[in-house]
Image 1 (cartoon, rainbow, N blue to C red):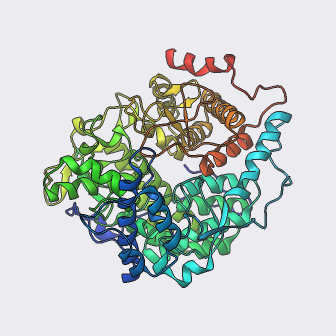
Image 2 (spheres, rainbow, N blue to C red):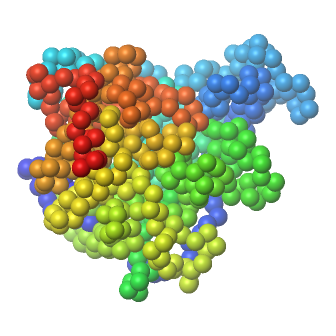
Image 3 (cartoon, rainbow, N blue to C red):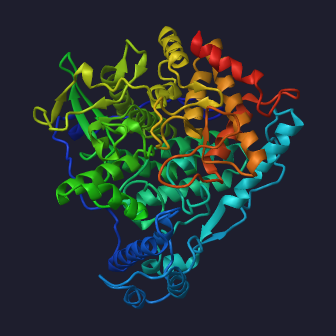
Length: 602
């Protein structure tokens, strides 16, 4: 099950019940509904203006190196109507590059200027008890540099954002923030989990609490944690890891009041993921009906941060209704965090075949199962025993559902399940079919290892590990996201920090000596590739190419980014968990690339 809580706060981790109405089979809404919290007229007018600016900038600058997100992040520095009137009208000649620059300077502040630098008060250059098992001087010096990056990524929202929300797409937040870096100038949901893990290593407990309570505030205001802290993200969430963040802070601090502050909003977030738009009922071959969850955004327009890209993708589609269906799929895929990947496409070479809302994902249900475990544990801590028991029952039901619908005993993996696109169901309940499991191999097929929910079945855990070793995902510099090179960023050969951490941590806690060795091997390769890239470029990267040690990743709809919140957090977590002996090589090593290759061929 989930990791054990420390003394003196040890409690039994128990799991979540679906509320009775959700246990009844029901039809699942496929059409998006209006975005929650989409803002007042001022915010809507600002976004409409910024989308016009984005379009004009593309006309002026051309597509090479164009980043549409930059323009919807601009804070308005003048009257919105005056700024709108100064743009060319329909049919008029586009602005020149010089005219565009002059226009932006007159009417807008620079992107990111509404977040200001803020030194975290709990940052220490050499925190007491920092990475006691890192004995290598070279590794330790680098780890302290990564630790110091928290100062570079720490921000606070400028006071003017709350005073004039009609001039900012940035949302006000109550506490200090840690941003991922580069073009990602705002808080992001699932990134924050690995930021918190890194802050725990850095002993920055107060900063971590602020990170978590900012997300709690978003649940309080919008009913769920937004994809990111921008008004244009109010139509979707991201992989739900808020309860896991609360747990990490609690385990490090024993702060029961912190748990109490977050608790009701964890229940609220759970309700969001159990709502009709996300819940799917499916009957197994034994007649048992199970409830699982899927990603589905409440949006059927181009994503504002990528509107010009989405419009270009949809340009080959004639029907407005069909364009809206594609936009709905695109936004729903962004909710998954895996934007974009062949995992969500019927044709891996064609983005217009995205079908995310028809997929029951392994990872989402793993995260909700973990959420249910955590809520039950927190309920026990604060004396809400009835709620704890309800969540225990619900998590048991989800455990059974995951194994009944997603487990594949032939492959020894959990597989995404594809629903029929024609809505073929009986009273809203789909019938399970074995050929509807997606038998392609993705790293997410192994994410349930993270829960260690199957540790009591040692033989099964060992079979899953053997399947991972033979999967083709284990590469010289880490775990690949998929086996298919599509030029999408969540496909081969890219490896991502969260993928390495979820799988390695699951292996580590499986109880098998062989699994622990494999976990350390994965961590070693990942640390080395991060170190080598850092030494070569002076930066931590968003993603890495797992075929070559020290090479950053590529692909996707934007240029590779640096900073980088979750990469920093995973490196620090790996160094804390596994240490680094004094004479162990930290740079890329040919000798160090043997283990995983042998594991795959063995």
